[in-house]
Length: 231
Image 1 (cartoon, rainbow, N blue to C red):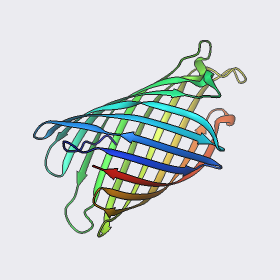
Image 2 (tube, rainbow, N blue to C red):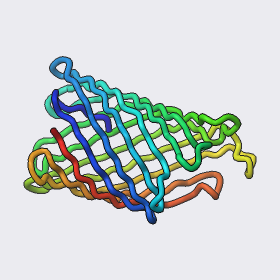
Image 3 (cartoon, helix red, strand yellow):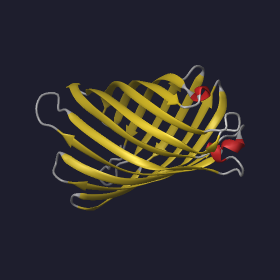
């Protein structure tokens, strides 16, 4: 979800995950500026390295530009656009540029556990760089829902679910049909504020991808442990 923070606040996160023998290191630096009361504009530069079976699999660099409007102290909406360069060091034919636009709404409720909910819709394109491989590019459209509960001093529980439809740009050479995927994601976890500005986050995410081509059907479970620093 694209959110925004007060002036002078940023985040660097280091994330380690496991997919079979996979390791993920994620370093994000967030820069935001507040323009007027209730209106915020921000930019998040992002760098990510994804390692699979102890080898370098994919590098990502890009950023997110977002505009947030606060309706009240408990509700806000965000419009955002993302750009990412996806580079595969050992499979350069898969290199692509991804562009996404989206909107979300979030609301925090009063009362015990301080529950909050958010919803997001988005769409865009992932364009292949290599020539002659249109089947590697696609158009994604999706939606996400999520929420959080505060369980105690510094401890929160969260959960989310999402659905994405992807239509690929050309027929698969082996099957001579255009690929279409429907992906469902669900996840949840706990966060613990170790001290002001330092949060430990543990979560599990499950992905089920259905495709009209059996080769691309898969199910995946990812467990991650993150340490987040706010400053």
